[in-house]
Length: 289
Image 1 (cartoon, rainbow, N blue to C red):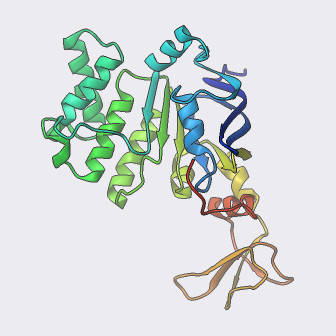
Image 2 (cartoon, rainbow, N blue to C red; image 1 turned 120 degrees about the vertical axis):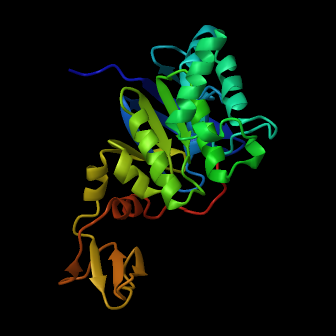
């Protein structure tokens, strides 16, 4: 039985001057965690902003949880049921963690003070910040601030959770904690996780979308993306000049990705290998949009 998608978009296009940040993007998102991979400038942040109703598309249409954001009433309904963690969340530095999440809950029209405060305590506990909920945000570490922003995105039990680079700048222990929270959030709701970290996608996501230059280059399972590199990863004592990518490993040999020579010592591919081959020929260091 086919489930109704949480998000259904068709022909989404956003242009900034002569640059197409999104170029005729169509997608469907269902319950679970979907990873959104792509280099800087691929259009990942723009796509999240469109779905969060922060930026209207120049062309195309989409629905979220059955509501059309092109109408004022539909946009309001989407925002009530949406959780959004932007790349650079803005904080009032004198707010405490509790006060900030409470403020977001008020914006989501949670008017019952007792119930709202219960919900704020719940999401702060979910991100392991109960012990510092009364501390001012300016006195929290960078990792704690990211968790405050995630708690704010989780408040009100949203049906759609949009996360833009949530693990950037975090140490391994903090990233592990974030992964636990995101995995739990993906049970029973739809999560779209934009990231540069292929290991986050491999560990968390049941689907993956790869974007480049405003368009979707791949959509499928992590296993299907990994399979794109089958038979195209090999080991050598020197970097193979014919490889699309290659680097020295910790044991001193080179891991090459591309079209192997005859008789090459083939290696098991990873999701990152499949991702690199999907982006073959794409620019990887351009301005972020």
